[in-house]
Each structure stands twice: as structure tokens, then as C-alpha cells.
Image 1 (cartoon, rainbow, N blue to C red):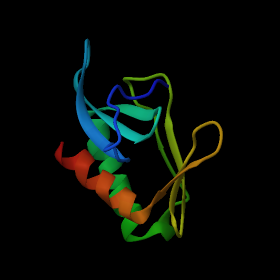
Image 2 (cartoon, one colour):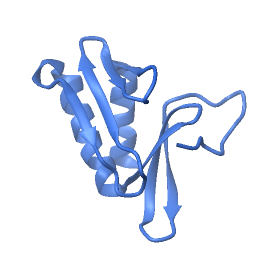
Image 3 (tube, rainbow, N blue to C red):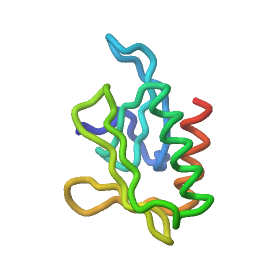
Image 4 (cartoon, rainbow, N blue to C red):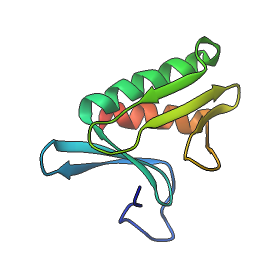
Length: 111
């Protein structure tokens, strides 16, 4: 995965912004950290938003979140636990606490 083109000292993660895909049209780029982002169709973003909302409400109902976005080669997989979710990065997992999960759920639903 390549990182976002937005840089600067005021950049805070995670964030969601609209991007354009030459074939798929408007998409959502969910950026979790420097060089860690996922390009989602609008419907995939809303699906992940609902999943984030559900696990933030009651994390004990599932162990893993998984999505295979059509606009990118990779997938989104995250282990769910009492402190939040750990996103699989192929290396050290990227931790999202519950505040991050709720913020992403809101942004993915409204962007």
C-alpha cells in the first residue's frame, strides 16, 4: 500500500476523505497511519461503518472484521478485543482504540 499524499505537522490519524477512482468513481480513503490506508467504495465504507458501530457497541459478539475492497489489491482484517481493534498490516498490527473506531464509523457513514 502506498501512503496518503497529505502531509504536515497538523496531520492526525485516523481520517477519512473522498478520493476519485478512474473507473469506480467517488471512493473513501480511510487512512489509519503514515502509509496505511484503504480505498473503499461508498457502499464498502458504509458497510465497514456499520461493522465498526456494532463492535463498538458490543465487542464480544465477534472476533474479526474482514472486508475485501474492490478498489485495491489488499484486504481489511482486524482482530476485535476489549481495548479496540488491531488492524492486520502484514507486520505489527495497527491498534485502533474505541474512540478511533467510533470516529471512523461516523466518518465512513457521512463522508
